[in-house]
Length: 350
Ligand code: SF4
Image 1: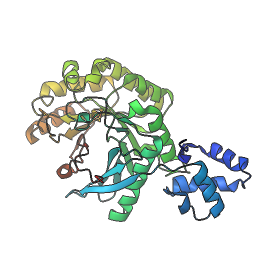
Image 2 (image 1 turned 135 degrees about the vertical axis):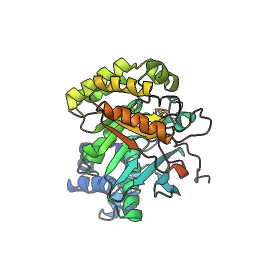
Image 3 (image 1 turned 180 degrees about the vertical axis):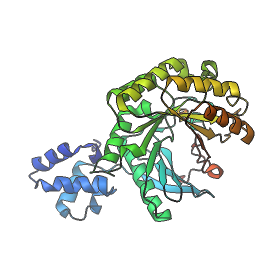
Image 4 (image 1 turned 120 degrees about the vertical axis):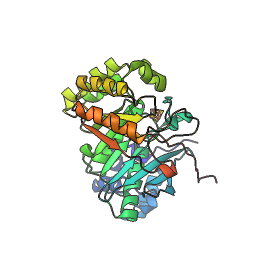
C-alpha cells in the first residue's frame, strides 16, 4: 500500500499548484494552509470552511501525521514537562518554563541523541531519528497553547535545548524556525529563539553564512581542552580553537553575540583555574556566559557545585569584566531541567 504524503510537507506554492491542478479556486490554498499552520488542526474534517467534497479529496491524496501530546508532570515551580507521541510511536519531550511575565518552550530536535555528553540524561537514549520540521513546530504550538491555558501567558521564547543536537538535524531545525517566525505560522521574532549546540564548528559557520537572525548558545562546560574532551566526545573533532574561530565568524556575519553555556560540576570545572581558562576563552570570543546549576542524573559521576564555589567562580568572571548570568535550574523535581529529558515517565503505554 502506498503511503500518502504528509500535506504539511507541501510549501505554499506546491499546495497552490495542487489546488489549481484540481480545478479548485485559488483562495482554497490559503484556507488549507491556515488550517495547517495557523490553527494546527490534526484532521481534514476540522477544516470547517472547506466544502465536504474538498475535505474528502484532501483525505484521499494526503495525510496529516498524527501527534499526541500529553502533560507528564507539573513542577512546584510551575514548569510543565510534556510528552509527544509521534506517528511512529516514538516519544520526545518538551518543556514549558513559565515566569511571572514570560513563557519559554524548550523543544527537542531528535528522538534520542547520537552524542554522549557525560552530564546529560538524553545521552543514555539511542538516537532513533531526526524530527521532521512540522514535529518541532507542533511542540512549540502545543507549549504555546498550554502557556495560555494554564498561566494566561503568551509564548515569549523558544529554546532548542531539549533532546538531540539541533545542528545534526540542520534542515529541519531551520525550516521549523522559518515556519515559527513566518506570518503564516506563529509570527514570532527570531530574536526570541535560541538554538543550543554542543559545538559543531562547520555548522556554526554555515549558520553564519546564512546570516541567521536567531540566538546561538554553545554548550561549552569547560575551556580546558582535555576536560572538555572528557565530558563531550564531539569536542575531539571540534576543538576550542575551531569553536572560537567559528563563533567569531558567527558574530562578524550576524552581529549576534553567542552565549556560552557552562554547567557547574563540583570539583570538575568549578575551580578558579577553570574560571581563568573561561576568561581566556571569552577574551577570544565576543560572548556572554550563562552559569547553570547541575541537576544530577542517574549513572552520572557528577554532582552539583556548592553555593560558595559558584559564588567564587561568578565573582572571578565579573572581576574580569565577563558578562555572566547564573541560571537557577527549573523543574528539577520533575526531571525537566537542562539535560534531564529521558522519557522516564511514559504515559503512552497503550
Ligand atoms: S547535551 Fe545535547 S548533544 Fe549532548 S547528549 Fe545531551 S542532548 Fe545530545
